Image (cartoon, rainbow, N blue to C red; front, side, top):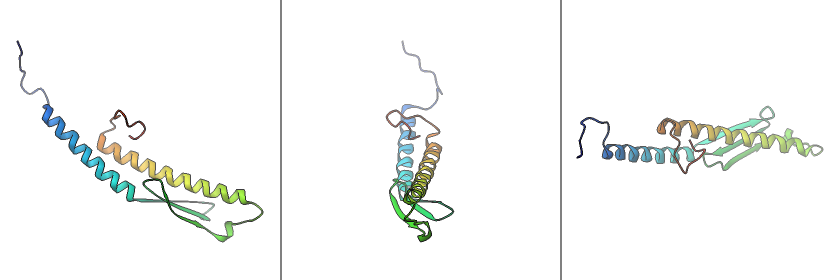
Length: 114
């Protein structure tokens, strides 16, 4: 004998609608995040790197004063620092904004995304 207890929280249909809404919101946000640009500098502004939300470098500016033929390693380090900082900013922004939609859910199959 099955007994139905009224008002036991959201129905399956309600939950499905919530999940579909969350998926739509996530897809829209991901599209927005992918289009955004994040800029970081190093060496006191000698190097400037811009990446998009897909972590693709869209712009790299090098101040001519940063170019020292005697120390190419310094220039390499400055570029590396700026790239890593720009990517870290893009990643953190994505995690924070996606986390706001998912409420911090750990969705299986998407480790590290949220």
